Image (cartoon, rainbow over all chains, first blue to last red; front, side, top):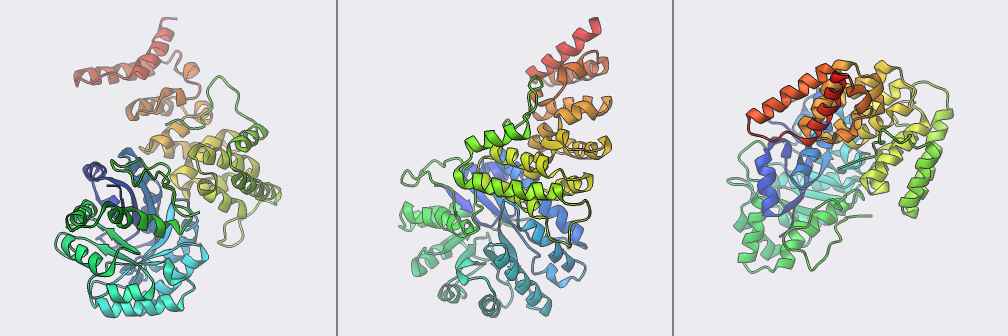
Length: 283
Length: 222
């Protein structure tokens, strides 16, 4: 089973995690820029973090046979802190970098005017740089947040099919699908989605435009949830081709929209998909 | 993994030789891209010195950033970036900015090009020292090239050699190794101590250590 985790915060994880992920079949990850748990107090703190996503973390991943790309943005939570907002001026120089495959995580946390501004500004930056956008949907007041997000996306210059709405669940999947977005699901030990509910959603909505991620970070989370969903899908009767579509081909297609996804360095997993070794996304 | 580190015995390739080598290995679209990028770089070299306009990146610096996705293979991107740097001939301020605002691959290219840029030793050394503080072996390998061989002081150079041995960077990457190790009793002592530490821990002594120690030891006898 070859696995592409399209949303995982490896900066917060250990080398043991990288080894376990490789052993489980993970060969590629995307690390979205996000909050660190401890609030930042200046743009400089973001710059050091972004540099790590473009320097040390890909090097670390490569030691374990995993290809690392990232997304860059001012996250929704810190978009509310005036000390952090000037980092928006630094984003353009990062959005031209080779391994930046989307703008993200952007979106809503508490649905404030400051978040409105940051979201609209960064959707425009994505359009300007030929990048798709990874949009976080809020944990509180999720359905209202999803609808407001879709409105802002519709008003933006970015085509809806270049948007991945993440942290979806049973209450938000339908409207996200109808809007034409890519649909991301974060599978967690206690919160967000779990493996069996994920399988149920795949049965009712199908595998098209669906991405599954662990969103593992510094909180209670599990970097092997992608593999556990793959196993649950097989147990539920999905065939290997559908598992490969959800866990590999869909993330490759979405992030491939950037034209910057480089999977040439990815080692083959134990099971090749129909002998297909063409790993490079986009073009 | 080896990169475009010139071997100590061969003269570094000229700009024309670099371009010819890339012409042979790049696909036609990448070659066309490189032609355009080199035109931008040549225009930057011809422009009067001064601050770049506003916050916008100069055109050639954008090409420098995107070389990886345009050229495909890592080595080709390294060479394309080195070629752009040698063509644009940025001043010390711009070189420092390109390094400090660069991805690991861009920083590596700056380090590989250092010896061909017109920099005061202090300006280039600050970047070499920054790279030698990292644990990214690709940066460490690029940092110990001819520029470091010429300009690093004895203490920093010895630590650079030791860092290569610690992090598994082949000492073949170290420029001027034979000349600088020769007669360096302090380096021999450091290597000997490191070998003792490895042996005490029941770990093998890297072959490269014995190789450098032999050079330093021979010098002590002469």
